Image (cartoon, rainbow, N blue to C red; front, side):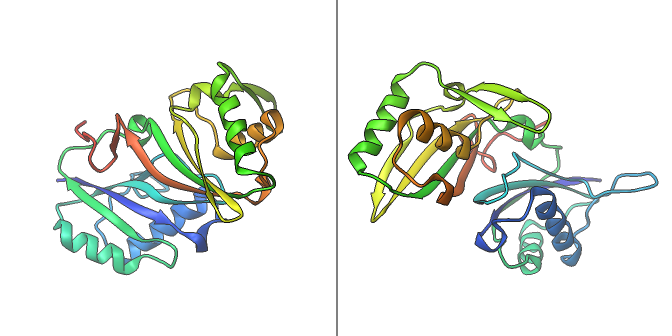
Length: 231
């Protein structure tokens, strides 16, 4: 009888610049090293039944990476956590884990908000930075042009910002807290918001030196391990 494991792990500084696909492959190797009873698909090219929540951009670290793993049978939760923790590579830490018998709702289907922290060097005054944020918060619409090799798309940033962007001075840098809405139609990247703040609102920072970190993912205001996971 299958059961399911949902885990919260990190993507720390040593892994900042690896892609989501490389990160997923790294986690699969760790699961195999831990000798967890992972379920695989059938067919000519079976793959591990492992899925993730909202993918991170390259260059972003996180303390809120969630993954679901289908298991071929029941495993003691503490034993599973211990085996996985011992097999994780440098740059990944296990922060939480739960095992359920019922199949949980897909992570990508339930996640609706992310909380980001951005540390970025100041190139002007703190008061000028706050004035720029106030001006951004005051407008009803703010269009960003997302360019890809195939097309250019207009995105209203304001529909994806679900609260105020807050700034705190830390020496010669600013630390921003940015709440971002995730929808079935898409979302916005913190780097895209930061670029727009600089271009449209004269936000006085060195955006190209920003360090972006994801602090949390939510479903209905709850972190994903605490959210209702019944299918």
